[in-house]
Length: 238
Image (cartoon, rainbow, N blue to C red; front, side):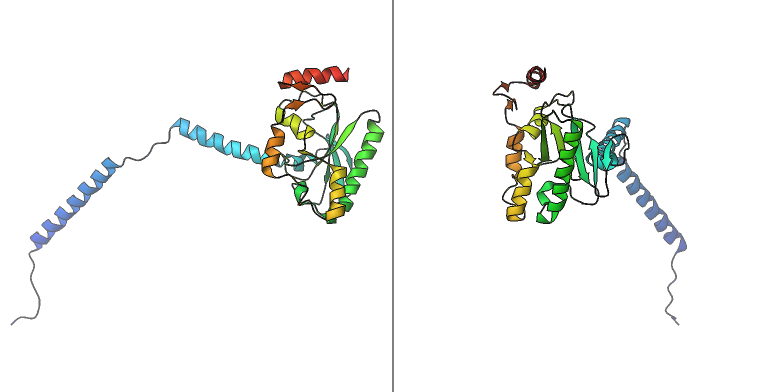
């Protein structure tokens, strides 16, 4: 009488299990042999560390003015709304930055007529600074169209441009072409139109401004190289 049970040879099952396990192990070894684990060399690790440091350094540089605002050694004057500091990498004999404490803007492009009171306050501070500290020097007051650092900052810079930090064509042209936006012109534009949409140069124009020939800001001289221009500027300063 059959009860539905089937008797299986235990030796056969054991042999099948053993063979299956051996085949699985062989397959695993082949896969491992074909795909060896990748090895990170010391050079690879060094490149990764260098890349991380570079990214971190760029971020620190861009946000450097936020730190400078709290550096007592650089601060010339501080009010409830503004702080005036010496530019750490000055591009002339006298070079200051005026920054609002509470306005969260990085570029003057976003300024509107709502910021007119702030801009006129900055303008007034700049003029007092010049009159009190450097009454005989000539100055430019304005913004870079494409700032290299975060946090809105107004440049108050003497027009001699004699400085060891004035090194490149980009440095020169950022202050001596249309890339430099005079504060008085910017205020007039905001008073008349309320924004800077028609006034502000586009990225293509800005790039062209920074590549313009090296022209002296005090005479028709055009230099071929920065060393030549710097020698020429030294002659003007004598």
